[in-house]
Image (tube, rainbow, N blue to C red; front, side, top):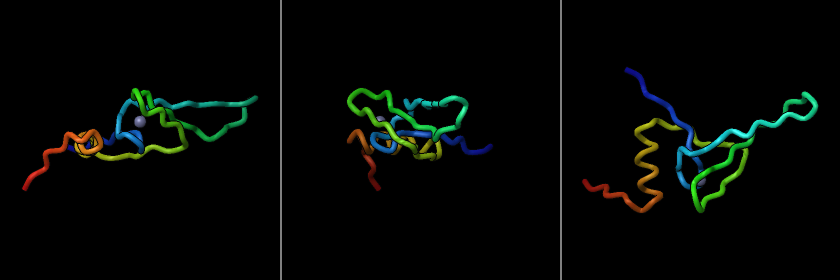
Length: 70
Ligand SMILES: [Zn+2]
């Protein structure tokens, strides 16, 4: 058991994010991330880390596909 954590784009909720590690002459600089999702183009210092199940829900909500009904 255990919950799998995934990191997703804070803008569109896509898991298609890539780490963009940069080092300048050996100096560590803050890691930035960018989103590969078409039409998003997020680029920034942070991602959302959530459960894999929540990620799926979040993605659906952000895409307007949610059919959450009681
Ligand atoms: Zn995105």
